[in-house]
Image (cartoon, rainbow, N blue to C red; front, side, top):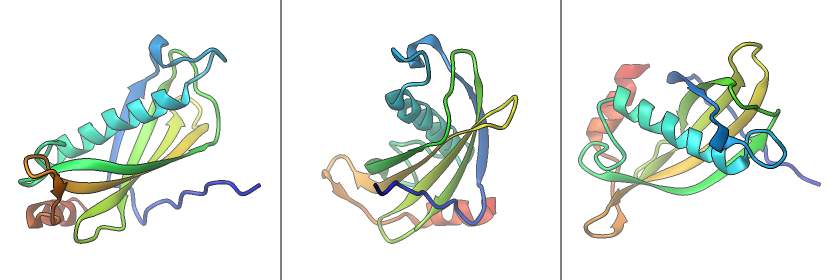
Length: 143
């Protein structure tokens, strides 16, 4: 059986900490897979805000998720504080990959690696847009 493997970026661009809430727990009494994607969404919003952007305005255009990959590495539980490290890969003419490394804060246990491929998107025209130069510049200044 082949497994998903997510390569880490050359460097981590952003760090944040998010707590696991009771609504994030599934019937197995651990962090649910859909909750991991919701927590990644929160981490992504925090990254964008740190750069002066939002999902609806990332340099004059919005963002849309094209796909997501999730590589489980451990279990998270109610009350855990999770460290999220985010890095950008594959920046191109219309989007980028965003990699999330998730670890439990108190002991460093690896919980998951996630990658979402994001495209710049004009919601009024309902089509993919070019990567804004202001976004490229913000990334270059954050290194």
